[in-house]
Amino acid sequence: MDRPAPPPYRRIADDIRRRIDAGELAPGDRVPSTRRITQEWGVAMATATKVLTTLRQEGVVRAVPGVGTVVAEPQRAARAEPPRGRRPRDTDTGLSRDRVVGAAIKVADAEGLRALSMRRVAAEFGVSSMALYRHVANKDQLVLLMANAAFGDVRLPDPAPEGWRDRMEAGARLQWALYQRHPWLAQYLSVTRPQPMPRAMALIEWTMARVTGMDPVTLIHMALTLLSFVVSTAAGLEDDLEAEQETGLDQEQWMASMEPVFEGILTSGSYPMYAGVAGIDGDVVNLESLFEFGLARILDGMGLLIERRAGGV
Image (cartoon, rainbow, N blue to C red; front, top):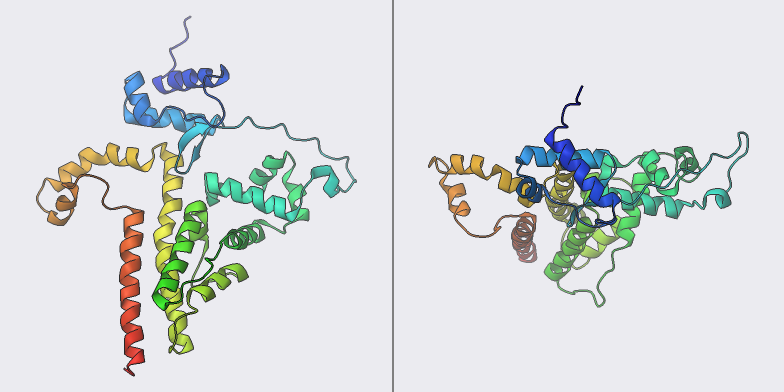
């Protein structure tokens, strides 16, 4: 009895996998996007999305922020466990706290914080997750170490801006660039339940160093208002990364797939503000434009406050 033909998504996924196995697509190469799949194989967007989701679940491809879906590196075989009763030494695994933190940052940057686990980081070294616990107590401590290490990579400009506005703007842009390099970081930070991160605190201190004439409570409110704005805007970076991994669509592809739905809403005439933006060519509203607009307005408001305090108001 003839076997039933595989569903379209499976047939396409197998075809892409054959290209990878044959070396036509090497590790790090981009695989066909959902839009390319719909064009090349003549299938619906939902089928194309399922193709990439299937390949990701099978470990064949992975999503890379700013790049797209690429061929994954071949998984290394796990090393044999040491004999029972023998405590592994650093020379057995080559592990150290810094190496564990560095590998965890690499995983979180590429796959998001939700994908991070002790087992996932251990796989980077080909060891069991238990080997990591000699260097970090648990996942919570690991993420805290990751965040503090990420802030340690920030390089302050020398010479530093002297004016209060230039200094605050420079500090906000340093944070924004940091969250773009590490999309998971903004979602980890909390204003209401802050974690002890000296390197992050040092950046905030530097940012506010040229604001004078403010009482301590007002100054900390100014600092946290600026921090909250940058963090909340940058949280969209991680949201977009996770959405891309779940759907197989990057932001541009997702918007293209939703275009018919939005078009029907906007042509109803009930939403003139949205319709006006929709008529403008190009991507005029995005995280970058929201950051630039919001930062300028916050600094304008801070300027009014500083002027009033300087005038004794």
